[in-house]
Length: 237
Image (cartoon, rainbow, N blue to C red):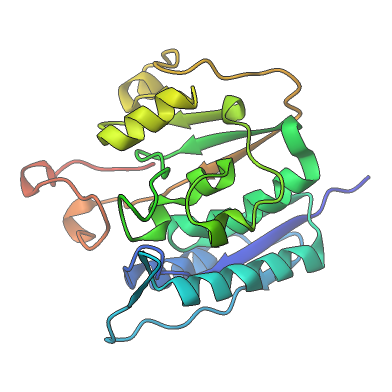
């Protein structure tokens, strides 16, 4: 049977309240190789100078929910076996992973390549790009969690590249026994540092990768940039 891969262009920026995400998604689409399967584009409000408002403690929640609904509908229309998402802030992963969880259930494993676990809620941080993995597990804002019919089993998650988690994040990861590995351990081929994880019955591993920038010095508008003293460092995540 032929596998269908959907390429989803999703230039959402409101989840991080950071307009450069919009342009970044378009650049990824321009630079990416020619697709071999269907392509869909989620309509996203273009950035303006107007400030975004908070609803239920979440920045731009109405826009985010509308775009999430549109992404869910587009994915359902194509019913793919796999999805390549060109985003966009981290929240663009919610609808694609929700679809894959419905399709593969507990046989789905997730490799989360990011320096941040994205398990916060509106109580800790208003920008929903930091809520996505928690929502997939079933915690956080009800309207985000409602899009996840099949919850992600924390035992099937590995977070690669995690460093300096906040107190809430560290406690969350420990309570859910989520496996993590630090950047230096990834570089040196080391074993996971926290969490037990599970390899049992995993038939499909899907990877979330956050690509930051090739040069912090020239792309300082992105989130979580180190201090200027570290600006000579190159990131390729």
